[in-house]
Structure formats: C-alpha cells, structure tokens
Image (cartoon, rainbow, N blue to C red; front, side, top):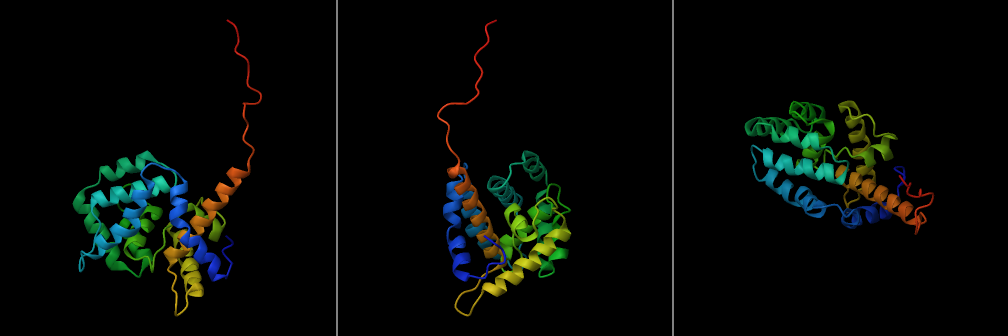
Length: 215
C-alpha cells in the first residue's frame, strides 16, 4: 500500500485482513503469540495501574512474538532470559510513566540488554497503541523507504508520520491509531509478498540438477 494513499476504505481493508495475514505465514505459534500481544498483554499492563509495568515473562513472550512475526534472532531471546525481573519491571514502569514523551520512554527501555528501539517500540505499543506504533520492517520501508536504520531518531520520525496518518484517516465515526496504521502497512506488505510468491512458476523438477558422480 502506498503510504500517501488517503482512501480510508483501503486502509480499513488492509487492517481487517491483518489476522488472515498472520495465519497465512504458517509460522509456529504466531497466531497465539499475536493474540497474546494484541489482546491479552495490553489488558495486563493497564490492570497494574497506577504502576503499570511489564514482567520478564511477558517481555519474553513479546520478544518471541516480535521475532516470529519478523526475523528470528535467537540471541535476543537469550538476552531477555538473562535479565533481572526487578530491573525489567522498574525500567518499563519508568517508560510508561514518561509517555507521551516517546523519546524519554524509549531511553528508559533500551537500558535493558537485548532491548533496542524496535523492541522498546513493541513494549510501548502494547501499552499505548494510540501513541506509539511498533517499529516494523514493513512500516519503515513504506514510510521512510528503508528498514536498515533502527535508531531512536528514525523511530521518532516514524512515530510522527504514523501519528499524522492516523489523524488523517480518523473521523468522528471511526478512529485509527498509529498502531492501526502500522498493522495495515504490515498486512499490505505481506499480501504483496504472497501475491509475488504465488505468481512465480513452480518447477516440477529441479533444472540444472547435476548427475551424481561415480567415484
């Protein structure tokens, strides 16, 4: 989807297709991990008011969701496993308390080993989707033209553009959050990849396969 597109119905269709796109990837546990991240985790975080925070086990599940939906990096899981429970809770509590100052919120989270701006964005998006979107490869590509720079500076630029787009798409009858915009972009990108894969001819036999050599 072109990020400049202003047709609300197209954005709505892409967002509505998100669950189906998740299923279409056929990745182990992704459907349940996504349900945890989008539905269960936000409720858990908010239920801890006035001192909302994320636990180490929840951060581990969040990281598993992030890596399964995107690119798997096992070392990040190892880093999260080595974190201290109290440190995770304190850092996340400070981060949530810093909102809507996203820059400060991110800085409170990246002190955790294995947590960079992208993972920090996932934590913030789970707690405040109306403010902070997830920093996905697909959103970065669609909005900024590249997903190679995962700095806090780039995330803040992404946030600004997704917040603006969310306001542009929202009406009195229907509202979009920056996180909705990110999911719509992700859904659209996955659909495009699937269409491309399906358009490629399937070879019934491997061309150019070499005959077995006799020794």
